[in-house]
Length: 403
Image 1 (cartoon, rainbow, N blue to C red):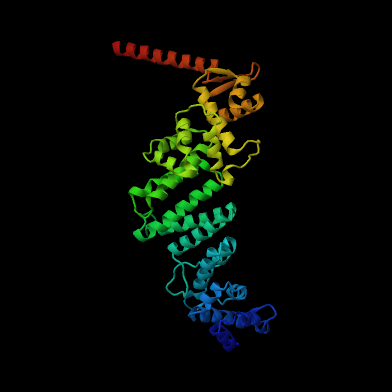
Image 2: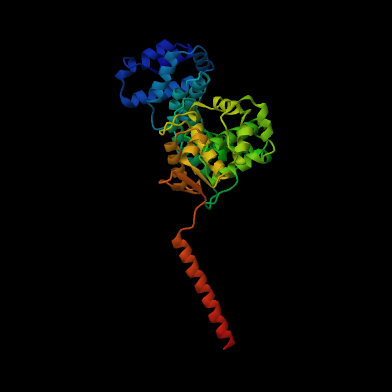
């Protein structure tokens, strides 16, 4: 049987190999142990050949690919020089080039990931694990499968921690040869946060990447500005909060912000971000329409309350901006200003008050929103009692000193 396999590999006879390894092929008569041995033999022969894999990938042979997947799923506990991992990498590269991202991820996910061990014929270092998990996460992102991408980027994060951990358990700076790999992980993680609509965290990650140019020359200047643009996008889309205002400030004060105007998909970002940071009311105009058109599909999604992500972000921002102009406002007038119904304006205001992003109180009887918290009578009474006690203590201390 090995001679037939060796002959088929040397002659690039993919159909002959399929006849051997298919469900009804010759190897079905073999025991499980013999099947595993023959699978390992094929992988060694395929990688040893100077033309087999190159020709198979060049002609996109489905028969050859099927044989490779079959043999990879029937392996002994160890394969010489971890050749199964090498084959998975080569198949992965071919499938990625062919934009078959989900299938590529599936092939690479089967890679043996045992920890480094000098006595083991195959092993995986923290750098190998990081690279593998990041590649898989990138593939799932290309397929818009955020759940799987999140799972593998989380595994990559654990590998990165091991990569930079000292023997005593403390974290150490990444070695020079690993900086590029760690930056790829950070970029992928930011993309996963973005795809998961965790825009505040994504904005922070993107901005950190955009500012890393002073630490390394691995990322080119254009990519740094691209990260800055993504940070601006996510900061604009993030829910209103003090943390969001801080990120807006970082991007607003960045001297490269004006460079976004020359990038087609970021042309309107600088002007919108400036208005948000300055807490100015933003009207729906051509700038905002072009901004919406530049967004990715997941950033245009309709939420459970019937608003798009952009609409919700704009309403929350304008709510805060209006609080800088008025001390009180009727919900009817607020709804007209925000271009929503009175009921929706009240509902959004209530949520923002509860989560602490809007300093205001609601009078539902009169339908009025009052900006700035009014001190309750109980708080005033407690303050008066505290003041009286402090004054009494001062008088008592003075009497004691004069006694």
